[in-house]
Image 1 (spheres, rainbow, N blue to C red):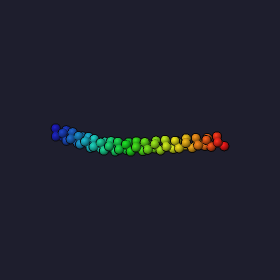
Image 2 (cartoon, helix red, strand yellow; image 1 turned 30 degrees about the vertical axis):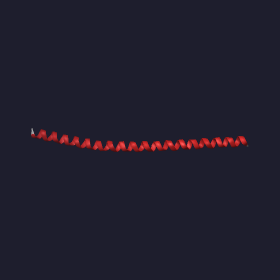
Image 3 (spheres, rainbow, N blue to C red; image 1 turned 90 degrees about the horizontal axis):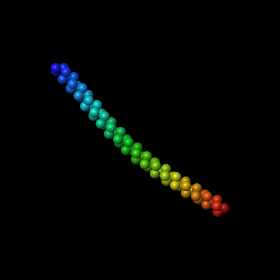
Image 4 (spheres, rainbow, N blue to C red; image 1 turned 135 degrees about the vertical axis):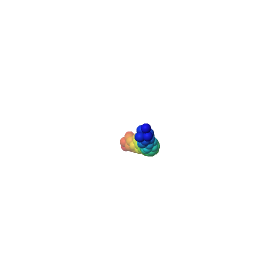
Length: 68
């Protein structure tokens, strides 16, 4: 009986360690996801700004062609 109890305790300890490791990993992944989402948002904003600038330049070039 004592041996069964000891085996059960060891299994429970392993499960506790696994849960703690998974919690740390989960937190790390959530932080990474948050960082990546912020970076994505910034890149989309920069992309939109660049697109607007290019469109503006195209309009200006067309206007120059029409004037000349």
